Image 1 (cartoon, chains in turn blue, brown):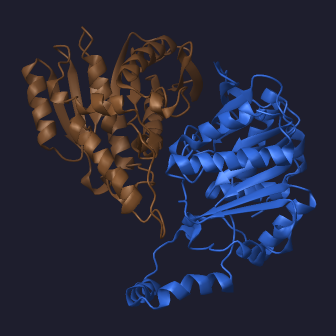
Image 2 (image 1 turned 180 degrees about the vertical axis):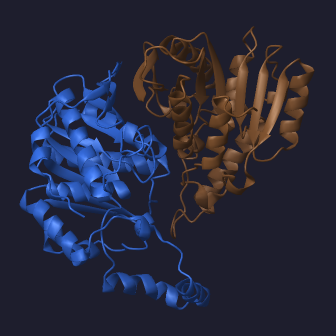
Image 3 (image 1 turned 30 degrees about the vertical axis):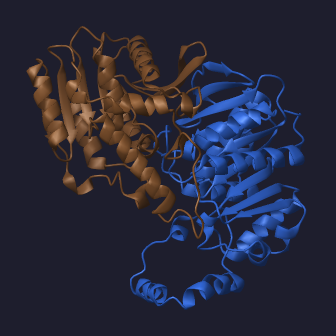
Length: 294
Length: 269
């Protein structure tokens, strides 16, 4: 997968984003929301503070196949919470998802880069944002990781159940509680004969060595990264120490933060769990990018 | 093409997406308003409704998808979703698609639980209406009971949590804050007892007929309403109520194509 930007793409960033549809403002307390058609058939909503916005903006990426509003409307709540703290936010659908048009013929990696670029230009145009934090759950975290590694405009990444790799320690912790359970052992052996696709088969992770390099590159650029792992990642992540063990020394640098919440599920089904997540993200954004006091 | 916008009353913004052709004048004299099911079904089936609206729009019939107040991109908190509010949303959405689509009439399509608020809204009309009910849930009490059972399964029987038990907040259902008044209002609705304007036409697109559908059809016909049913391909029937599929998307492609062909009159009902 080639994620390098060509010169034409860099030139295009300076041009205004082509808008297919005019947006109509929706004003609510503490923030303003506008609906946009932009790029090649993309649809999204910008949420920005009523007053001056931070020069750091946030892009919320699709969580799997879920629409831009996020699981249980989580992206709407997050956008409004961050806007109330001074950050402009764009939640949008990548092509083929939610409200956006079906994708063209470009390869997935190129399309991801082009669409994220269009989203950045839209948010820059609408709110004066200059650098960006990419936030995603599951496949959205994978997209944020790939783009964050190659795009100099990325200042931060929030990776919810994002990239990590099983280590020997992971397998020991994973297997020990199960090895004395005959039923689980039998099911495991049966599954090896006819393996069904697992969640990992739907992820877009580079080879481990490349992922280490990508994270190191982000840290070298002083990109701030927040990893959050839940119990929904139990099949590949089960201990805090695993992040450094699988992604190398960069994962232990001061730019990288980690939360591990094994008692929570992958999509934050319960509202009390979403409240914790949103509060954590808001606090991290404040500490890393210095928003105004809410 | 499709165009997103906000509309509605001040302080009660609704998000809409109008699907249509680029040209100024629509090929059709009527528009289509698509109503999304409530709670998680609405998220799961979003792309299927988008695809149906897009196909119909490209054919020259303006088609509007929208978010109920308190859902999706529309204003309000999830606990602010109410039955009276949905009836108001439907009035505003149908006025909006008439205005933006520059057409003189609107047809309605409701998927799953959206059938109940749609029928309740159309009961207030005088002139006959045209409705498509896609896999409708017509008994409000059964609907609410099934939601509560699914919620229990998600907490305790779906494998969502590993070695831990969680309790949900009060007024929390299937991942959303839900007002008791909404559940009470829905539970009190039985579509068979709703009186649509005489001369109305209802088409049901279903994977299987059942007692609720038969009873609804019988009662409506007795009230002078035409009711027809189209059977969809059983092989792609969504597993709406299977706990392990709760987070998965629902996109029955052949059903979407069947409906689009009929909505655009390429194939007779």
